[in-house]
Image (cartoon, rainbow, N blue to C red; front, top):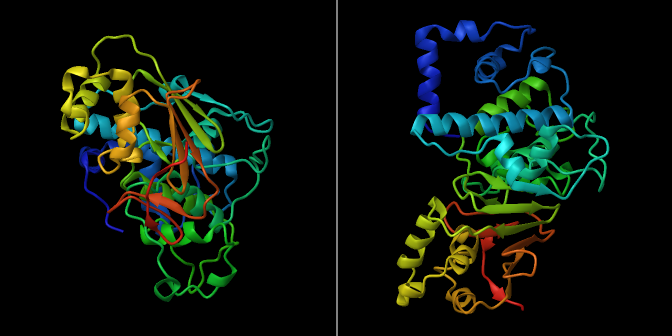
Length: 362
């Protein structure tokens, strides 16, 4: 996998050159394996690895521990990316929890990072109310959690086994197979010898190494791994369930970054720009706040009823989208479709990937 050289990487290099790395490395830790030392040291310095996981690196990792690593990776990445680009607005843990009402509550795992990992789409429960935080994860489960987190724009594909060469490929669980192939395509996880070792336990140091790959990957902040959201869109709030996200909009009628973005989208769109003097912020939010998911430029059928204030529902194959609902501006309902969606080259979804089309059903 090619890692992008970004401002985040520059910050790390700067720390190495100034000698601050050694100071950051003080703390209790056992010795990681030689192959993992560089990733472990970098992740500890970045603040990704909590002190409780800075030992026993060859031990299996639990679901709750893996969730914390993913959450730390995502939010530290957001902070450092913003600092490198001079951006004032970025997602923090506190801000996300303020903007999101989570409709899922686990009775056996109430940690903040478990809630955040669920909101990000990294993890699911083993039942409606149980998370099983102390259960060790397998390698196929780790691949699934990683791709659940980041699959929208990172150029994933389903690498065939004639390229992978895994001797245990046929034994990988059906539900995990798309993620295993996708994880290999972007370099998150590789095989163990000639096998993928699908049922093998994932260790702390292996987990930390994959966090560094996630940290340096193309990642776009998303709810449940599917819905891209922007920290500067202050007026938008979300209700998140297992298979749905509802978006509400609080219009205080003051100019904002969201309003600026919507006006630009309104003006550049061929249909909406025909009557720019009739610009309507509520309708613009419905059309353009999530245009990467709705793709209104390619689907003018959505624009006409929305401009007329009509409630409609659209089937995208992998999800249904309802606009102008009684309790929300937009509702995204995700179907139990095998595989993922991606916008790397074109809007595709499924296993194998197929182009996404939208059809009105209501």
